[in-house]
Every structure is written in C-alpha cells, then in structure tokens.
Image (cartoon, rainbow, N blue to C red; front, side, top):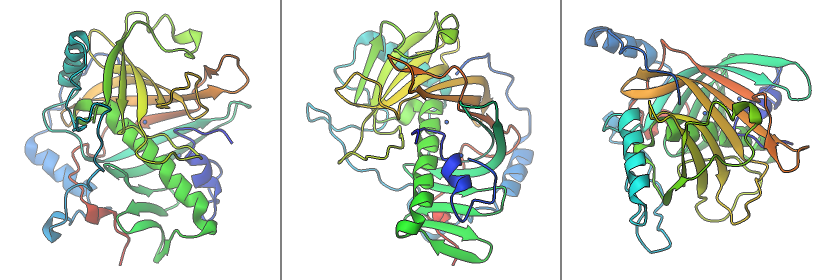
Length: 347
C-alpha cells in the first residue's frame, strides 16, 4: 500500500459500506480582484450554504474549537499559535512575517466548509477517477465529509460515525478500521490545507531559511522554482497519515517554496520530523496554483499532490500528480465559525 496525503479516496470509495463508487479522497499566480458582492448578498449566500451542518454549537455554549495538547520546545518554551521561536534568525523572521501578512488577515482560520472536485490518477495506468466532495473541518482534527452517494463520514468529540440515510453507525471494531483510516487521511488533507493557506496561527517549533530546494522534486519543476525562497517549518499543525503512529505529539517538517513577488506558498515537501534524512514513504510533494483572494485569505484553487516513486534511488516524487484538487469558487466558507456541536452525529 502506498501511504499518501490524498489516498483517502481509495479506502473511502473502495471500503464497505462505501464501495459502490468505482474508486478512491491539501501558492502562485497574481491575485484576481476582490469579490464585489455586497455584504447583504454575501450573508444571504452563506445562509444557503449552512443547512448541511447544524451550526448550533455557540447557542449551546460549546467551545468554538477543541483544545490542542500543550507542547514545549527543547529549551522549555511553550509552543503557542503564531509565536516565532526566539532562536529564529532575523532573515527568517522577516520572510515569515511577509508571508503571513500577504496570505491572510489578522483573524486566523479555525474551520471551513468547502466543495472540491477531485481527480485521482493511477501511476501504473492512464486511468483517472473524478468525484465531488462536500467537506467541513474544525481544527485540530474534526471532519464532516459528504460524498456524492449521499453518505457522510463524521469525526467529532463523540467519536467516528458513518451516516447512511436514517441510519447512524458508530465506527468501532475491526470491521470499521477502513473507515476510521479514511477519516485519518481526510483530517490529514484538511490540516495541511489549512496550514498552507492560513499559516498565521501555526504552532512553530522551528523556523529557518534553506539555501536550496529539498531533494526529491522532479526535474520538470526545477526551472519554475528557481526564483523561490525556501523555508523550513516544524509544527504539529500539519498532519500526514502513517500506518505506524509515533507516541506523543508528532512534529511535521514542511519545506516551503515561496514566490518572492506574491509571497504565496507554491511548493511544499511535507514529512514527519525524523533524524533520518531519508524520505519516508509518507512524504508528499504539494504544488499549489491559481491563487485568489477569498474570505480574506490568498487561497490556492488548484492543489496537486505527488507521492514518492518507490522505484527510484534516491527517492524522487512522481512527475504526474497522484491527486489533483480543484476548489469550487462559488460555494463554501473559509470562515465557517463551526463548533464542536457541528461534528456530532444525528440524534
């Protein structure tokens, strides 16, 4: 099995009871003009998008977001959202500050509701598979995903559930392992999308400049990325699905290729932080493009994911994306203000 940030589609669409769909389920062009929709029309549009989630948590006094566990650096300092480590160089501070200012407003992204078109490619054949997904996410790991089949997968404070029509099934035991794995992989996509789109609230364990691009990127991208600035970010707020989960809070290393003009993140190589410099099979290469302003964020509307080619030595990412996500432009909210209650199964 090939671990992947975007392979959730395979188990999701092939695993019972979701097997009836045929196959398997995170910048930089110049920004386009800001939307000219009036506030009243925007509010009306948002109301039309809300019914799929109950969006009632605030009225019940629920916390807006679940609390992430406390994390400290090697020097004992607390890792807090948006706080740059004291050991960071002046150049890295300036570069990171410019990136954060360019990509978002002061208010961080905590939850979103978005619709994606997904194209999944097979590396062994010329076949591809397409589907549409309605997706909601609340940091750090809550997921609500509605498929074209009408079935819904939910991960929330009460656990993992499958909703099929009027039937609600708690995903427990060995027979539900595939669906729980799917939810892990969905959370992986969402957390990394949020981290790369709205990095202002990342919990930064380390932050440093890189002299060159990381190893493993296919030569077809080398010319495109020549002018990029490269930074290395270590944070628990990325998330890669792996079969063997480490104990404690996993830290992820993201090498970011930044467009010096727009300050958008165009490329990212993401891996679990490990003393071994060899790329693990779960490592992914992310290419982001078609950035536009949306809800105050500078958002990539096309995201391509490449997995490692296991046949190459040293390891190199496939030239052809394993998965391509296209964000629908006229639906969804990046400031959805969802709460814990929105990720509970139907009563």
